[in-house]
Image (cartoon, helix red, strand yellow):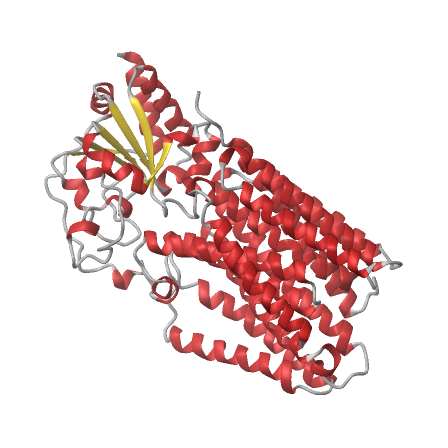
Length: 470
Length: 93
């Protein structure tokens, strides 16, 4: 019986891995996700059968309530709100691992007459229980803060507390101390209970402190990192209940999050430490390269339409502003109108455009843009110099040529889309306001740039009207 | 201790496997990948089921119930929303 459970769990783990592998290509991705879900169903059924004769009340209630909530939000959420949705789900996953660990301590230690956690569960389980609470707790509150920032319930720019590094160090060390106390030293129910809840409380505070100083545009890194944490928390739970399937699965997710984190950091030319602790984008870092704009040329929608109409090749560069303006459908309409006139249309996607990895791709997919037309930065960059018109929609820092030329710029060295090499650049933007890095964008005063001062959606619809009229 | 070392071995190997499999996912699929991976991390549900099985209204049982709810939202919601996204990706004519 027991070995059958192990074998079936191994099958479930294999399904997760095959499922992820199928997500390497768009045509098989959806099936891969389904296969992974089948693996999950198998893992749950095997566990339920393995439990034998138990009272099913809580299990069934939990599964029904959780499924209802999950499905409700999964089908209700708008694609533009996907980053905060993923943040919340992530937090719940991490939170679940922490709560499992808490529950296990009560179940195996506090509701029995055993002196300390090491004797009751084994030293290895005692340590991983503490880690599970720590990582899970940080994931929960960190994700909720990220959600608050993305949903604009909290200020999007970094919140820098005075002496924040000191506070963080104290809370961090306190968390480690509480964890060590719980796993190794607390004896008697009173002490164990105290250690348990101090650890829980400090972990929750730590999650808030870690994410609150990070600005909105750095959210792709934060979400990827929290994704990794939720996996690690699950892996720790696997160590506690000695379930290898859980360890395998948790570490796969942990690895996925780390890879995405690394890609995001590289795309901003910043270290993870700088993103986490640098307070980038806060008011005090944004001085220096500011300055008045000179010789900015602007264009009306009619002129923009004429320029687009005369082009042979057009590249659109979407950014977070497109998501805010919900302009993805208007963009698709304009792109199709241009294509009908025989103009080549492509989209250039910077890795950190938007608020999570792949954000722009999902929005454009929602608007029915074929994914082959979306081109990654490295592939599209050599193409700009042979392109007639580039339309920048709500992107700013990722098209700032200062990143290539100005060694004093805070974004120097960050890989950008070289849109300034195109013959004409149309920048659709509501004002000359600065982007997340808080610096001036040289692109706006380049001789081949025309600013279209408008909301992205209104501009795209307006240009389309002009095209139809001509 | 032996179980722990076996677990650690599996953990390290699985991290390497994860790097191999996931670094080949194209950027266009990064969002669904993340939300799919997220759903998978709800596998902690398995642990939650153990602790909820007592179904007693003591601290352990109630925490177990809470854990089952949280993990199930993560799993079911995560897979559903990933499927919704992946359905949208289409090839050009």
